[in-house]
Structure formats: C-alpha cells, structure tokens
Length: 116
Image (cartoon, rainbow, N blue to C red; front, side, top):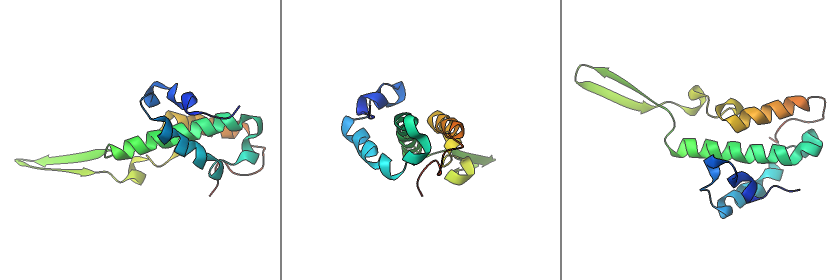
C-alpha cells in the first residue's frame, strides 16, 4: 500500500489540506525518507514524515512562537528563532516524535532516518 492524500487527511489536523498540496509532499517523500531504514514500515514512516512536514509548515506559516517584553508603556514582540523554539526538530510535532520512535525500532537497519 502506498500513502495517498486520504491517509493524511484522516488526521483532523490535515482534513482541510488539499489533495494537491498533500500529493506534492507524497511525491517529495522518496527523496527524504530512507527506504532502506524502514523496510515494511516505509508507508508508515512516509505518512508520519508528511504529517510532520505539513505541521511544521503550518507552524512556520502561522509565524511560529513569539516572545514579548513590556517595561512601563513600552512593549516589544518578536519572533523566536525556529531553532531556539525547537520547531525544526523531530520533537516539535507529534508525527515527528512518532517517526523518531519508529526509526528507533529499526535502529539495527542500515542508514539514517531521512536522507540528507
């Protein structure tokens, strides 16, 4: 079974995402997921990677985390750099964490989790 847009849209967080947008991520997945690492779990790894990327993109599009400081009548609000917020890591989304767990279960397999 290959991953299809409906698999991704089954998650409520991605139900409103268009099939065309998801298909772009599906097409990109083979260049990013190390198939030799996941074996029979390749479809699950692909699905988790796509969900992680969609969630990360939505997070970035929303402006990411912000911090603000107020002293008297003066206030400043600024974006926290993605790296500082941890949003560029696998732990930033539930799907990234699940992908990490899946990768750990295949720790004896050759290769890394994703392609460089």
